[in-house]
Length: 227
Image 1 (cartoon, rainbow, N blue to C red):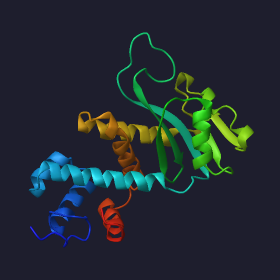
Image 2: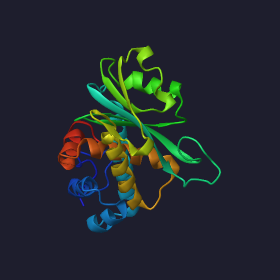
Image 3: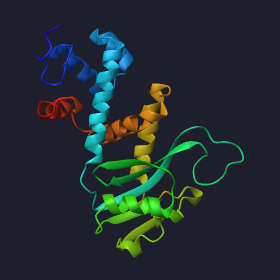
Image 4: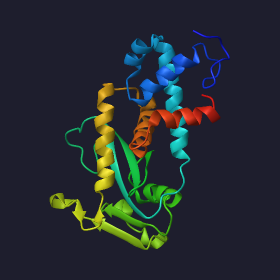
């Protein structure tokens, strides 16, 4: 198994570097912790701990990304509980609200929000989007006033009658990310609400690096910063 201290990637390791790399490769291939535990011959608690540490590292990486610029799309989506009859309004009662910003031909950024109010959405946009950017959104009132705070190029698409695109003014990119995230999260058959943000950020990280070798990316990071 190897001795403690000989693992260059994991602090206070009780497994060998070879075993850790095997677990990291499974994680990179998006194999569940349960299956990885079986494949690597490592206990489920140990595998779970490593998976959680990797997700926490990924969360920190995503949250420290540089501001988005160029043409960006903004939108919200709703995860979790099913719609409750009698409840109306933006999204569904009981769901977790996620706000997303996508840089066309670039990265996506996501953040769990308490509501879709103008104050909430504008605060995130101001912190993550360069003021010279071109912003595309739907007609939700939460996006009113972006021009007033310096975003002079704001175009809106009407979702009514399934109008998701109007020439260059569309939010197809961020809609594509929502589909990817929800499809991927379904395979976990549920997880605790407190862990949702870690899973969401993992979706973000995988989407942003979808054309790259995730195993190599993570290994290079871990060579500089042990887990």
